[in-house]
Image 1: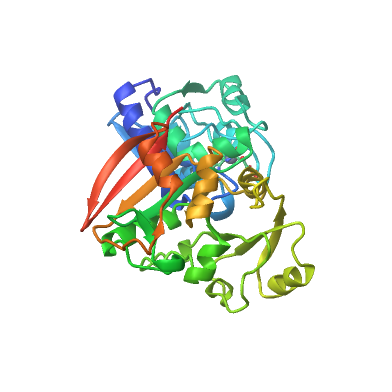
Image 2 (image 1 turned 30 degrees about the vertical axis):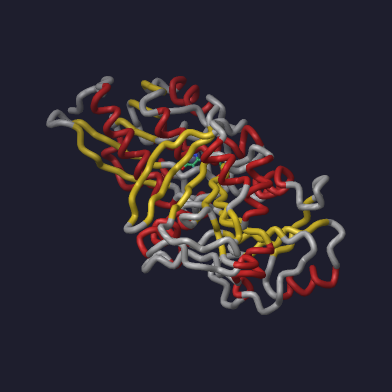
Length: 376
Ligand code: AOF
Ligand code: ZN
C-alpha cells in the first residue's frame, strides 16, 4: 500500500536540486541534447526513498527518465519522478519519455521548466496530465535554466551559449611578444580551466593562437582525458599546419576547422585527409570570419556550449558582436612587460563597461578567478 504523493515544497526543492546536479554528470558530452537528470522517489509510508537515478548519456541517449525508470523497475508504480527538464513527448531517436513515465505507473512528476524544443514545448507535461499524473512545473527553475542555458539558446536563438576564458597578467597581457605562450596562472587555475573544457561541448580558438602556441586543447585532468571537447579553429585562410598538435593521431577529440568560402580547396582536402572536419562560414566586413555566422554553424552541428580560449582577436570580435554570455577572467600575479600581447578591448568590455556583472571571485593559489555574466 503506497501513500499518494503530495506536494512538499521543501522536499521537492531538495530532490529537484539533486536531479539537476545528477544531470550535469555528462554536461559537455550530451550535445546535441540537454544534460538532464531524473530521480524516481517512492514513499511507502516510511518517508521518501530514491529508487531510480538516470542522467542523459554522451550523444544524448538514452534520455535520463528511461534510465531512472529502468533502475526503479516495479518500484516506479505510484512514485514521483523529479526530472530537470520537461520529459519529451516526441518520437525522436528514442520513444517519448512521457509515455514511458505513464506506462511505468508514475503518479507525480515534478519538473522545473518546459522544454523549448518545438517538438516538446509543453506537450510532455500535457501528455502526463492527460494520463492522470499530477504534474508540477517550476521548482528550482533558475538553477535548471543555468544548466540548460546552452540547449535553450541553441533552440531559441540558433547559437550556443558562449563562455570566454581569459588569463591575464598583472599588467593586462595575455601572452608574450608576438603571442608567444607565457605561464600566467598556476596549477590550481589550470585545473579549473581544464574542468571548464570538460564541461563545454566545444572549445574555440583563432588560427593566430594555434600558430603561436600549437595547443592540443584537450582536457588533461587525470582520469578525465576522455572529456575533451570538440576543438574548433577559426581559420579563414586554412593556414593550419599539417604538423599542428591538433592534428595528432589518434585524435583525442574531433577537430573542426572553420574556413572562409574562398579558402584554398587543396588545403581543404589536405586537412580533411588529416582527420579535420572543414566547415565554411562567411567573412564579416572586417575580413575576419563573421562570429555570429560561426556560432550559428556550430549550433546547426548540435553544439550547445562553447568555451572561447583565444586569442585576443577572437575574444574582441565576439565581445564586440555581443555574443559572450559569461566570462571567466583568471588574473595571475606576474608581470609580462610592454612587449607582451595586451588583453585589449575584450577585457575592458567585460571588466569595465557595465555590460557584465561580476558574479563570483575565487582565489586559486596565487591567482584570482573572476566570473562575469552578461546583464540582460
Ligand atoms: C528528455 N530526457 O534526458 C533529454 C531530453 O533526438 P532525441 O530523440 O534524443 O531528442 C532530442 C530532444 O530531446 C532534445 O532537443 C530535448 O528536447 C530532449 N532531451 N529529453 O526527456 C532527456 N536529453
Ligand atoms: Zn526523453
